[in-house]
View (cartoon, rainbow over the protein chains, first blue to last red):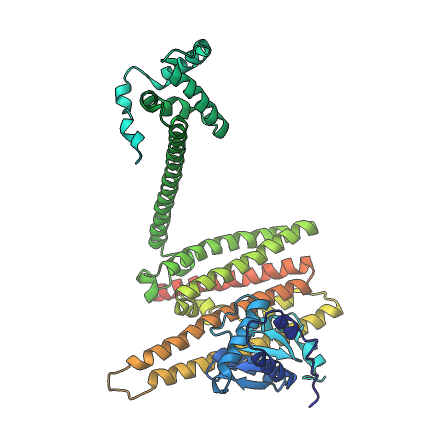
Length: 136
Length: 370
């Protein structure tokens, strides 16, 4: 599957670089995980909102790469890093614990709220097409 | 306190000296005796002049000169020789502090008064609302919640607010109908559309607060009429239903609009389905949680906490559902022209009005037959 890897120029990277609050290896880990696939979802296996966002992408014909942080060895640090990323770019997410968090084409889109908003206003599909997750 | 406090003469002992009178007297003393330095009686007044000027520089209140100075005049005579300036300064500061304290107290009391009035007013409104069965739509419907008063203040407040919201909604629908029947400028129409949109957004905000107070209440739709409840989806209307109601009313649409609406219908349906899937999973996991362990044993305590955690997720679902409704309305507004939007909002408002009317017709029909 073709996908774009944007590391240096990605939005999340430049934002996070200014913070320097958490260990860079966690950040690098998030970066690399987010770049693995066109659509990457950080989720919790038991979270129902995460289930909903996975269903949304699958319903659109996209197959996202899902990382269940509760089953991941470094899940706690990654969750913390994601929360910080979310906190600095938008308001507090409505889901407890901040998950799910969606990355498209290596760039952070945000939580369920942001994903739904961008889908309704028509910006999600072009984003997916650009990242190579959708063909039409 | 310092040593000078023991020399303070209580105001009573001043006796003859009324504050205003005193003020006048000092004035005379300043004028006539300014040159006489040797006189013992004049020494205090000289000092008073110096310090009153100091006061004048620092402060702008006139009363402190008169009232503040009265009891202290005698004090100065006794301890003038020691630290006149310090005493004067300290006395001035005391007056200042006392004055500020009085003003603060006054402000606080005023706040208390207004709060008290507001509370009485709210209690009256609440009583009235309770007597009326909260509001007309829900009044006839008999349900367990309607009979017993909700203990939750957040919910009680929400129900009252919703009653007002319905009244305002009816007014807006009337206005839209009247205006669209005649000639109206685009500017005026835009204003009406903006107001109507904002009104819906207000409802979503109210629901968010109510969901925090009692999410089951919002989910149950008990604050709505029975016919509306029939179509309930996560505490409100289905966004896809909204589009189904609106679309027939737009006869002329540009190609771009048709395309946009088509995309909106699809994305709306997909988002709705996603949230529905999430809700289903929530129900399953909650059921598993509640049924966990052995039934019939009587012990449920350990599972209660995890069940409660699951229920917290319900609040976020209600919020996301309202968010979806909000975004769908917003997107429709973007796609349509002002006139189309006005017509659409009228159609939407009227749709819900008809549902509410259907509910009361159904209930009265039901009553008549028994």
